[in-house]
Length: 276
Image (cartoon, rainbow, N blue to C red; front, side, top):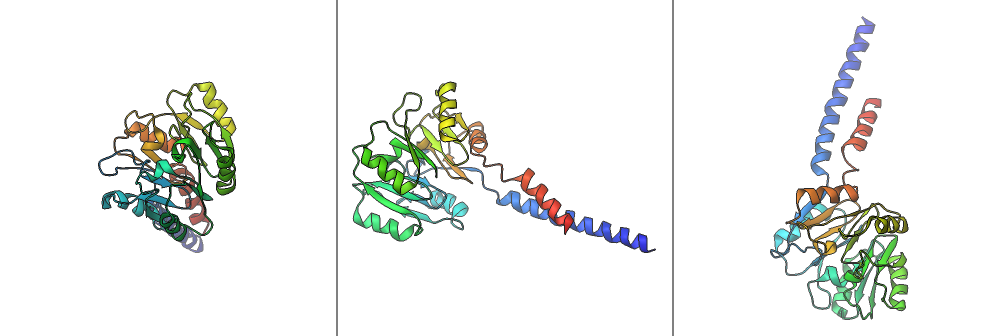
């Protein structure tokens, strides 16, 4: 009788564990963020009008509520989503460069814009206005939280500011013979997407330099200007609405957006529930 009671108790416990596990798994999967599509005023170049890092997101003023809601619904509980202009322009993604540590903007950024950014971003984020001839900073610099690729002709002073403000190691490089490294590559701490015509040897050399896996690819149905068509951080990505499902799956894979999901997390959850 005692044995039967113990078996009955154990079976009930396992049933409850499995039930709760399935509920958690369902909730987790529905909440999981991967790669989403968006557009700005019928324009697929969302990377022109936004900047995404692990500590903040900038979005251009004058967009539609639909554009803002895509970002805010996924990010607002985690990092600030800041509506702003830079140098009176909405092309904030091309004019600025940033990571979790800092934000660098061109000298044409107004005092009002600079103060707005200082008031809106976390206190830990350094903000620096730089005088640089190559003022579309987002086109000439690509970075994550540790390393940056920069245009070979960028000013030495700008390089020093990037090192100090963003806390990164800087490498003067080209990508597939393009000096606009910020336009033709997108980096996170998990991986990177680069110009589709990047030779395999160069891909290997860049991956070794940056210490992250790299893939040559496109967004927005074959567009080579990657940074114009997407933004990414360590847990989510946003791509233009023309991005194909194949392109989206490459983005999710190289940036490891699917790694925080089912297999590892749910198997660990199952084990912990049963142990409980």
